[in-house]
Length: 304
Ligand SMILES: NC(=O)c1ccc[n+]([C@@H]2O[C@H](COP(=O)([O-])OP(=O)(O)OC[C@H]3O[C@@H](n4cnc5c(N)ncnc54)[C@H](O)[C@@H]3O)[C@@H](O)[C@H]2O)c1
Image (cartoon, rainbow, N blue to C red; front, side, top):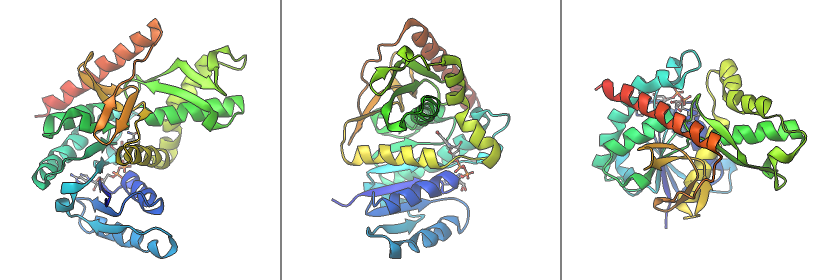
């Protein structure tokens, strides 16, 4: 069956995600949507120019919500990165809310019934807001959450311990924001618990993982490659009904918000949330993160 992916918000993140989708041949149809006049069409044409050199084919369409009726996945990266201040993703609450308020009714009118993956920040607040706005089961609405933070932790550990990043496994959890944390009890290097290694320096590694994104952001004023990669991994897991586990943002009924925690993803979105087996300290950090998301969700609701 033909696969359709929509990307809404074709800025740094949306265009890199679109490029990834086309060069990897992840979709038969890619729908690129942006509110800036002429923008999505220009990026569509530029991307279309790459088709001559690829061994896969993707039909690329700009600004047509009606094609999202049967989309398997919609990836949302709308907003305005330029409003981020003082290293705080929550400074985007207003612009991201406005973008969701614009896009949600259009998705509903189109009859979209697939899986929505939110990238826009603050990610967990945005996911929870999408769940309020769309008439879909909340299992169909997820966010990249701490999946990118997990990539960053794996990079930091691999560099510090001089091992291949593919052999570093484990999870960052909680808010995709300053209260996120590495659950070191879950991290294994070459299949050994990281904490057992004589090279394990928790404080340094935790800081390197947490600050990984800001080091990029402070120079570029955006980040794009890591996030586009994780969004495509998640989209593929949905379309292939892969049953893969990501530390992405999905609803946690115990805390009443969407938050980064292990989530098995397939065709219907969330299949299940495997148990976490965290230490007492990690449970406290997770609870603190959930409270932070709730506070920021209240700030978003106060804008109504
Ligand atoms: N979750 C993560 O791990 C992660 C990582 C990187 C970036 N982000 C977030 O992704 C978002 C996008 O980042 P960026 O650097 O691409 O920003 P950007 O400002 O370059 O692009 C945003 C795009 O969205 C468009 N847009 C705004 N409102 C829209 C709407 N209603 N419908 C369609 N398009 C709309 C804008 O015209 C713009 O082209 C930001 O919120 C950023 O913080 C999240």
